[in-house]
Length: 144
Image (tube, rainbow, N blue to C red; front, side, top):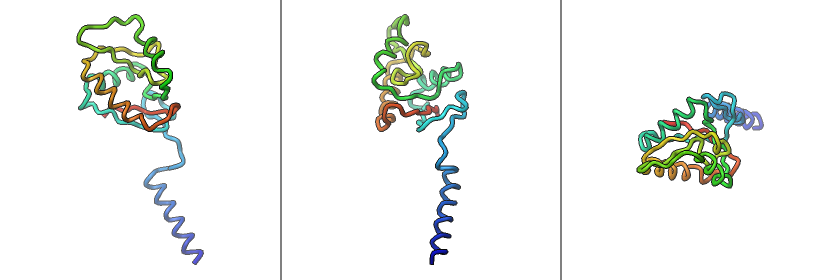
């Protein structure tokens, strides 16, 4: 009986490793941030928010981090730093990437003018995705 239980447990572990690859291994980014670890992944919907998606992809291609370490308390200061000296433009929002709620945001963030509906819809979508994650969670942002 012990051999049967042991065999079943070993088979279950083998199935978990096959399905999950290695469930005990921390995820590693495969983009520009090669070697950077992260805890979670969100897949940003380019079809819903195309201007913001283009901005995210362009910013990452130019060297901005695809990893967002959540820091809600730092958002106000980061936003102030990232938008300093960037004039407003009638009919547009100033989109920042990395986002203000990320430790990686703030001074030096990439800024792009996008339509308010795209920017605010994208912000709401991202906020909803990150709601369940505590501050300090490292999230990989991938555009789909």
